[in-house]
Image (cartoon, rainbow, N blue to C red; front, side, top):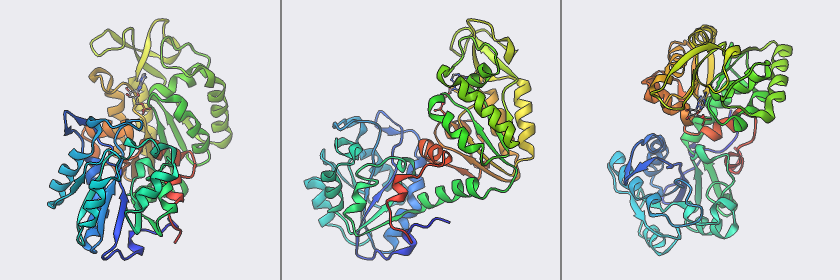
Length: 397
Ligand code: AMP
C-alpha cells in the first residue's frame, strides 16, 4: 500500500492547486499524435474541479534545455485537454512559465477553473531543482499534486523542489494507479511472476536484472539486450548490439539465476540482416551461428515459441522493451508474438512504458493488457528497486 497522501485525503474547495502532470506528448507540426498521457491525467483533474479547486496545471515537454522553443510549447495540450474535458483550459503563454500571464490568469480564477502553465523546462532551473523556480511555482498555489509518474524518477523544481514551499503535497490518481500496479507486481505478485526485458538501451536496463532476479520466477531477455548475454555464453554476435563492458556482468547474472532457481530464458535463434533497414536480405540462424558482418534484429521463431510457452504458466508479467526492431515491419514478428502471448494470459499484465507501450498499442494489443505505464524510465527505476524522488517528496499519510 502506498503510504503517501493522495487527492482523496484533501479538500481543495476554493483552494489553488498546482498539479504536476506528464504532458510530454509527441507533437508534429503543432498536432498531438498520441494523447494517452493527456487522457491519463483526466481523472485527477476532474476530481479536483468537481470539488471546487482552482486547478493550475504544469508539465514539461521534450528537452528544450532551459531555452524557449516554440515547437515545445504546451499550447496544443491546452487545446486538446479542453476538448477532452469539454471545458475551457486557459493557457498562460509565459516564456518564463510563472510570468505576468500566469499570475493574472490565476488571480482571475473561479472555483473549478483550469489554467495551464507553459513548458517548465523553458526555465533552466527546472532540471537542476534550483530553489528560485521552485518558489515561483509554489507561490501560485496552496496545495501541490504530483500526478506525473513519467517524471517521478527525476528530482526537478516542478516534481520535488516545489514541495518544500507548498504546505500540502499529495499524489494524484495516475501516480497512485501506476505505483499500485508496479508495486503489487514487484512486492506481492501472484506467482509465477515473469519479467520480460528487451529494447536497445542495454546500459540503462541491464542493472534492473540484478534486482529482478531476487523477485521473479521467470526472466526472459530478448531484443537488443540479449546479445550481451549471447556473447557471455561464448558465442560471437557479429554486428549486433553489444554492451562489451557488461559481458562479465551478464555472465554473473546467468550464474545468479541458476543459484536462485530463476528460469532465465535467452534467445536460441535470431533474425539477422547485413543492412539495418526493412527492405533487406534477412534470415534466421541459431544464436551460436551469427556470421561476421551480420546483425541480430529480432528473435527467431523457435525463440518466440520458447518465450510464449514459458509465459503460459505466468500469473503476473511485467514487460519492458521490444523483442526486435519492431518499427521495421519485417522485424516486428518477435515483439508481436510476445504481445500476443501476454494478451492470452489469465493474470496481471503490465507494460513498462516507452517503446513497449508504443509497440503494444501499434500492434493492437493495448486493450488486452491490465496496465500500460505512462513512464518508461520511471517504471524501470521502480523495477530496479530505486526510490522515486517525486513520490518520496509528497506528504506521508
Ligand atoms: P528501449 O528504449 O531500450 O526500450 O529500446 C527500444 C528500441 O530498441 C526500439 O527502437 C527497437 O527498434 C530497438 N531494438 C530492439 N531490438 C533490437 C535489436 N536487436 N537491435 C537493435 N535495436 C533493437
